[in-house]
Image (cartoon, rainbow, N blue to C red; front, side, top):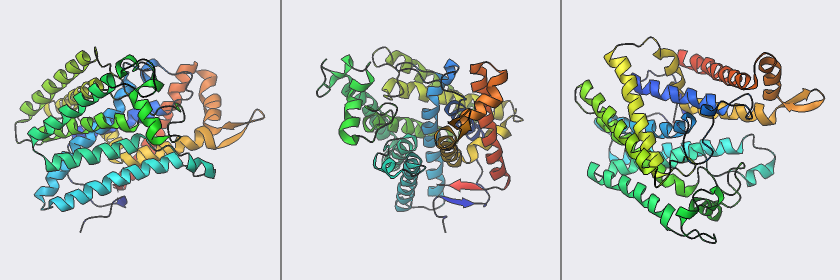
Length: 389
């Protein structure tokens, strides 16, 4: 009998691929680091998102989450098929898991659930919402189509999105086709779609558009599917050297194609452009191949255990850290120099800022936040408690 979704379990885990766990752990740790600085006004450039077009190391974290979800999706579905699951079982599992991921995202958006008017203006898109939708679509497509058909679907998604975003006129906007407007966040076709479909339920920091909106979620499905292709390759019964060489080659090709595509459809995380999809998928392939080469070929594993801890419970890390950040950055306030001040700001100003320059103090706070969550995740891992979705 299978376990109900979204439950805590202490049952032994199935054998995992260490390189994938390390890659996931690095991604989770990176997310904690960039999401929780001491102050948003003093951040080292690599720890900030690109202002619009272009990319920084911070901009690859989200697509890495989607890519690794694709990799593990293929490996998981293959294992369940080998165990005797039929298409109905797999479909129900995919739909249930995708719906739960979306639900967790909506709960995070609503947290702390007061005042009540917050719920009437809840942000509908979000990181987990996009992961849930992209995972569900990619998994169902991979389950019901051939590899050749999947390649055609990915190509159609990426080229179709490129054509739509550049050649279709934006309703009500002066300037004609989208190619003339894609440098203005609020005037892109994706922004118009966000406002048309979601109205006042967009990201509060942008108001007129959402970086995880409906239209830009379409190419994100391509990111998950490229991860499925990588998972298919990793699952092949080939020599390890051959599989790693294939990942290195695919990664180099993907990054090159993405940079070339950038000339006509710039790399842009907020629009999740097709060049961004190919570029970040290529970087993910190179990252996994490099980690596997270090671990499996060179046998250097002493450094992996602390990093793996971050990847064992990614949902707990994401949801828990997000809710904690909401509390200490905005909700929980104490009197500080005669004014109500968020607890996070008090800690930053009293513990880190007195002896460090602002950027270093901000980074030190973020590192302390990462370490704090390491301790939580380590305690769970030590008890073999894993939250399964």
